[in-house]
Length: 286
Image (cartoon, rainbow, N blue to C red; front, top):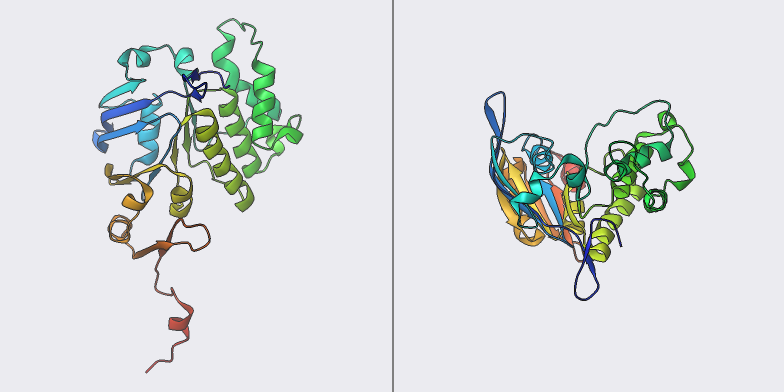
């Protein structure tokens, strides 16, 4: 069982529930997130989608306490006292994989992943008896064990992204927030990462909140989807209820078709541009 989890009566571990209501965030006096409401439930994956600049990352950072809101009510397991926790205690419950982390020099992959254990070490380097095993698990789960002693400055963007994710997993929290986690990853590792996200929710009861741009990936991995536009959540619910052709077309400003993949049975989206079909490109001019 992962640290930070509780055990249900049936013996199944579960994560924490993180809820936010009335979230309004402003940059330089201009509201960029408007009265948003979001709940991340144990054992569920909630994905935030929407156009660039719609407020997805800002909302995720706000519920992770990295962005100061103008107004917000944040609840951890239904208790406002949970968000009065100190930084280290909160970090034992909630982890965030952010975008654009700098590449540090002079550190190995294992060094970076070990940073995820900082909530358990205490101010004066208190011993962390579970740390080594947690780091080993995180390295294995993200497929970077063989890179453990390599210098971080020698990694590709995709490798480094997996290492940062390993650091979040080593943190062993009940809530995991992922801001565009598939960035820099090739197709294989995108699929493996999304499989891992589902495993964390299904097998460990973790509450997962993620920002994704790929609508098909969102439909494949999510229990619930929140669609944002211009700083507002315009739809929230099951993927098939949120990802409709009229709503996506209106939100993204481009024609988007939605159907069902005959192989997987999942939703499939397609943005239609000016050159969207081969037949139309080959049609003779009258």
